Structure formats: C-alpha cells, structure tokens
Image: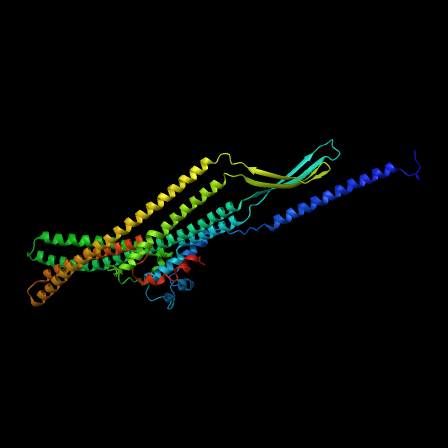
Length: 495
C-alpha cells in the first residue's frame, strides 16, 4: 500500500486514459452539435414560408358582375394591344379589333392558359435545381455495454449524370413551350368564339329589322283583305291566308329576338364580361356579309404557315419532342446511377465516418424503352394526321367560300329584281294602274327576298370565318393591325 506521497505510475496512466476518453467524448458531442446545427441551418435556409390565399367565391362573383366594357382599368390593358382603341375612351363604336383586344385581356379561359404557362416555367426552374439528399438518423441502445448508445446520421446524394440532367431540363423546357403553344391556341379559340358570336348577332339583328317591316306590311295586307272580304270582293280564304302568314311572321320575330339575345350573351362571354355590360354599346361590323377580297399571296403565305406551325400543330410537334426526350432518358437509365452516402456514427464510444457508394442496377429496362418508343411513333403519326387534316380543312374552306360567294351574288341579283318590281308597283299605284293590294304584295315579296339574301350573306360570312379558322389567321379587317402588339397581350397575365 503506497503512502500519499508515493509516486504511482499505473495510477497516472489510468488518469491520463480516463481524461483522453472524456476529451474524446466531449469532442464527439461537440462534433454532433456542430453537425446538427449545420443540418438545421441548411434546412431552415431552404424553407419558404407558407402564404395562405383562400378563394372567396362570393367576392369573385360580385367582381365579375361589376365588370364593364368602358372601365378605366380596362383602357390601360387594351392600350397594350391596340393603342388606337384607347385614344378615345370609351370608343364611340366598337369594331372587331377593339372587341378582340378586350377579349385578350379579360377572357377567363385565357387567364387560365397564362397561369398554366407560369406553372410550366416554375416546373422548369424546379427541374434545373440539384436533387435533394436523403437524411437517415440512426440510434441504438445496448444495456450491458460500457458505452450503451449508438447514434448517427447518413446522407444519400443521388448523382445525376450531365446528360441526364440536360435531358430533364430539356423536357421541362419543352413542356413550357407546349404550354405557350396551348395559350396561342386558346387565343385563337377566343377569337373564333368572338367572331362567331358577333356574326350571329349581326344576322339576328338584321333579321329582326326585316321581320318588323314584313310584319307591318302583312298587317296592312290583312286590313285590306278584311275590307275586301266584307265588301264581297275576295273570298274569306284569302283573309285566312293573310292572317296565317302574319302569325308565321310573328313566330319568326320571336325566334329572331331570342337568337339576338343568345348572340349578345355569347359576345359577352367571349369578352369575359357579364351580358349587362353590353347594354347600350354600339357594336359595328360594316363589312359583315360581304367579306373584303384578299391578296392571293397572303392566302398562300397563311396556308404555308398553317401547314408548318399552326398553334395546335406546334403543340403536337412539342408532344413528339417530349416522347423523343423520354426515349433518350429511358436509354440512359440502362446505365447504373451512382449514389454517395457519407455519414457520422458514435458507435458505443467510437466515432466513425462512413462513406458508402451505391448503384441503381437497371436489370429490366427493355420494356420501358419499347413502351416509350411506341409512344413516340404514336406522336409522330398524330402530327402527320393533323397536317393532313389541316390541309383538307383549308382546301374545303376555300371551296366553301367560293360557293358561298356565288350564292350570295345570285341572291343579290334576285333582290335587285324584287326591288325593281317594288318600284314598278309603287309607280303603278301612283298612276292608278295598280291597287294598294298589289303594291303591298310587291313590298312583301321584296322583304322576303331581303330575308333570303340575308341568309346567303350570312353563309358567305360563315364560310370566310371557317377559312380564317382553318388558317388560324385573319385575312381582312381591322385585326390585321394587331399583329405587332399581340405577343405582349398574350405573354402578360391580366392584373
């Protein structure tokens, strides 16, 4: 037994060993704290705070009902597309170009398409970012061990090859391009709806006006027949026929007024406005029913552009590019993908720093490649089928307009003959050679000829609309001056 003052080498050795263990444990704890702090800091730095944005249907409905065509806020948006329309606000009369400018900034479906473009761009930015690592936390307790605890963490970093990353970002870029082409297609769909509604409104409005004049002439004829039947000059059957014709005209008037109201509502829907927003608004289409002629070279250029890059065709080509990109990715997935897994463990008193390398073994990839290759073939056939459809639609629309123009010309000549007969009847009534009944009958015949001519002019206008729709390009009218500012209106979302 050694005294207090004796020197004990073994005791010093044990003391130094104990201190070394304590220092190592403290160092391990400090390392764990530092690692945990770093991981927590990285996690917090990557976080984005959540901002709630609840929908309020009642407020949305009230805001839509309050929309007006002459709103001051609308003027600034229309000025980006058609500056001359905003010079005098509101315009005294709204033509097709001004109305289309309003539709481009107010139509809700276009707002949805713009939002889809923004979502595609956000996806493109997300794909460009590096892949997030996986974090695994481990712990273990051994009761009879001097150092009972094992705890640590491991990270898993998937390493994307540069070629695969390039393909993935390229696929996202193609998706953005497809969204933009779909936006352009929705722009044309909005224009199609607006032009069709305006055309229906124009024919219904003119039909109402002609039918009102026809009803007035038939009322005069019924009054004349009543007197002649009472005087015994005509048979009662003549009066019955006149009354039946008048009732038929009344029914046509009711149908025309209903068509006019439906067309007015369709115009408002295409503009993105409530129907009451068009009350008292002067909508003009002076060349309706007689579309202006266009240069042959303009038609040829529009046809070539439609066959190569019409918006729906461009979207189909984008779909083919997507399948081509997916096929390249499937071929790259035949090769192993590398994973790096560094970590740290405090293993029952021993600090360990493992560094693992993992591989994804693509043992079964032929099926995926065959599937994607078949999808590419389908997309290619769809492009060719759509091109053939566009070609046939344009050719049919050209012939349809030629036939409709010929029919309208024939109706115009027939109308001229009816006008000549009405003038002759008026002259005969003035000279006393004809009676009032003959003059009214001539007026009724003239008004019926006007209705027939109106119907054929409507068919001609519909044929021109169909040709422009097949080309996805206007051939005449005030819209031709919008092409310079149109990309601005398409790209910028409504504020």
